Length: 458
Ligand SMILES: Cc1cc2nc3c(=O)[nH]c(=O)nc-3n(C[C@H](O)[C@H](O)[C@H](O)COP(=O)(O)OP(=O)(O)OC[C@H]3O[C@@H](n4cnc5c(N)ncnc54)[C@H](O)[C@@H]3O)c2cc1C
Image 1 (spheres, rainbow, N blue to C red):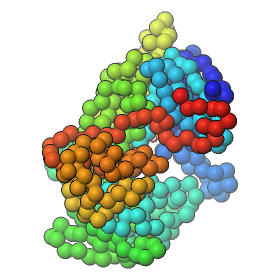
Image 2 (image 1 turned 180 degrees about the vertical axis):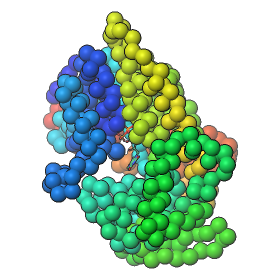
Image 3 (image 1 turned 90 degrees about the vertical axis):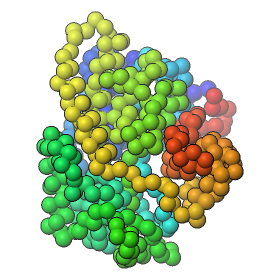
Image 4 (image 1 turned 45 degrees about the vertical axis):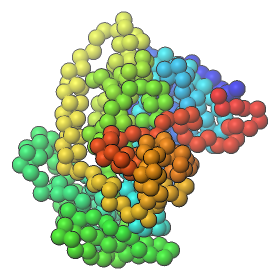
């Protein structure tokens, strides 16, 4: 039995930019709103909160986030931080929660649910990627912006995506030296058509130019068309091999290697509720199928922000507001109509920018991950084991998972699932569409405390 039970008009899962903007519109529209986030603070990835002492010493990190959070609280939203949503049923009308500190279980009964659960960073394995000192760019950014600590003194940043630029700038600000920014693609030598697309987004273009100027001022070389081949070190990364386009390899000394390939939507909740999905533009993820307002195929379930497709912080805010207006039209139909044409135009423009980013920063193939490289870190399964399993006939994702245990560890495939899927799919059919592990309750690990003393997970 849950320890607490609550009734609400709308439950918003995720207190990042999408969830915050949505909760505000919903509460201002007169609905009761419960906003749930497993973090102890609201803000999500972009409006992350600094600890009090650091705010006092270094100032507010992104004051717009503070302002938005204050508005949400002032509007009467029932904010429940430190609360994980680990399950749902009945088209999202019932959400199962757990207090991340005590394990206390709860249940929320709601008339509509908005999933605004954000994204994960995308990692791709390479030899040495499990060495201490090899991290994701988001982790390095968190240390630099929240704790004002550089992840290393001699940092190499690599992978692909526009996100590498702000991370590099944040590292410079806290005193790290950047040995190189190694970009897999050639986004900063774009084709004429890409330049045309970028010119239609002057604010985003100006932001990228600011980052590139900062890097140039600090003498950071942005190497395009290059990639990390391997990291070396005993107890800590000390060197990294960089493969150049002409086939040559050079080695750089480093004490921190940050490698990332953009973001992957966190879609477990909508998938658990059975909503229709389709492949995302990268072809490697399944995204909820939605209408222009984020309504899914499951009646009463909406999605917004990065979990509905990676489009960045501005799109998350706009999409959160559009979904909120759609929920208001549904649950409070008597309200005066609100003009949304400006918001819709903005959403379409931001979508076009996201499409441009997908074109400028394509993902590499998983075909050249060496057999010996570990893919599932939780269960210690290598790329070779997955390929072998697929080749012996277990060539769907679920069979591969059962045979190798890849994706059965604590992260439940959130880290490796997309790679296991790609490797398994290639076993017999290179054109097979990417699958993903089925979403099951609990969608995140639950503390043992939640399952003892007579409490049972349904
Ligand atoms: C690591 C990282 C760093 C980033 N840094 C930048 C940056 O510097 N600049 C930039 O422009 N963009 C950055 N982005 C992208 C930008 O932050 C996102 O586009 C934006 O935050 C998306 O907003 P969102 O509301 O969709 O999701 P998020 O901001 O990710 O918020 C999602 C929230 O949902 C919560 N949540 C997820 N699942 C559950 C659950 N089951 N139960 C309860 N709560 C849950 C999470 O705790 C989180 O707070 C970053 C993204 C990531 C992943």
